[in-house]
Image 1 (spheres, rainbow over the protein chains, first blue to last red):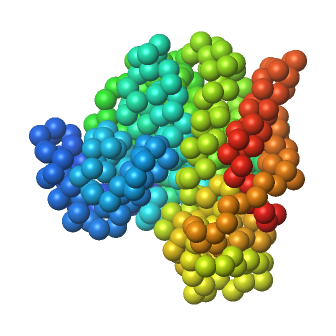
Image 2: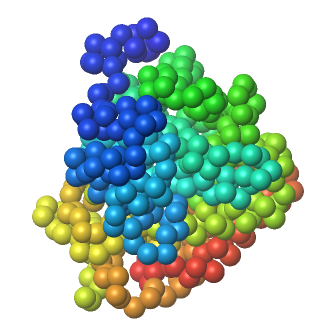
Length: 282
Length: 116
């Protein structure tokens, strides 16, 4: 059985969290420093053509409902916003580099649809919940980032997890992780988030997206992320290691004060806009 | 460009270029064109239940609605919602979700002609 010291010792021996490509690292640094203009940021992004193409593709995704195709990188960055851009910096290189690992393309699809659903929920309920749409989308995108490291460091365990994904008698993925490893992907994801200076409210959401009632900061945001996660699963963007919607969705709905009519409206919009998100990204 | 049906089971993936977006039976985008059909992509498409895919151009005729494909997706949805049963005793929530998803797909009319 893996335990926390063994896991992180092996993890650190292999170099810890994979380093970001140089240009991406520079982009993250500039976003954190909050002093770069969009034009300069676009010049920087352009240095990594593959990343630039993915940024343009993201700006044209259903998340932003743009009436015309976006082909200008500066405009794409304005549309996406800096927080989600930072999340894309932390996720795209990882999921691209390890896309050959079984389960990761599905996890990336789940993450992108969760980002969309969390964003739609934030757009619809921002007046009552007072949440930032960009922050909500960012959380959706990175909420399961810890799983990437489980796929890398505990591949046999994750293969077993995927074998059980279809069994409704089994515990949810995160509870099985805790039982077997004594920690879960939320814990690892939070460690990753801390390394990249994510603010406390976002760290809280990374840590508690399966137990939003435990969140210390901006609990509504954590509930919203949990809602996006479950709605994404509902509409078919499943986790590779657990394919069911968890009963906590009922509690989340109550906690956020969503009437059935609100939930129906949200679900319809999520189905409609998720149709344009591709399972496979090339 | 005309539609080309690709039988994934029998197709040797090496070097086959997908020239138009590949969608599943509910019209969800699975692979964005242009892309090369690699062994991993073939496995993933098969894992998503895709047996035959249509490769079609964006300028192709609109997809026609396929009620059977919708019912199949709704069955999968009910399976994904199965853990809610003990907590949703009257089944109101599950019913509401299933009917909403049904309505959303019917409204969009995104279902393709082919079956997986």
